[in-house]
Length: 77
Image (cartoon, rainbow, N blue to C red; front, side, top):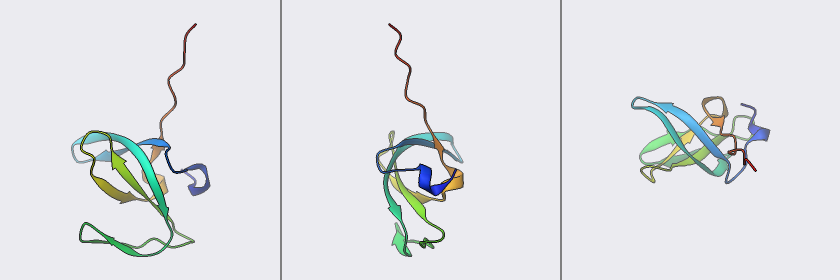
């Protein structure tokens, strides 16, 4: 997924060792930082996204290509 198509609050999903996980984007990371003891090598040219799991509330950083934007449910009238 292209970084410019992801925004704070977007609902996304990603693969984990336990299967697909769903959550939302908390913020775009454009500078290196430590998250939960792991170095995140984010930069302006290679941004990553801090996401929060809906199920556990845990946060993690992911590259844009690892995230899939979830479609809003269609409303039937």
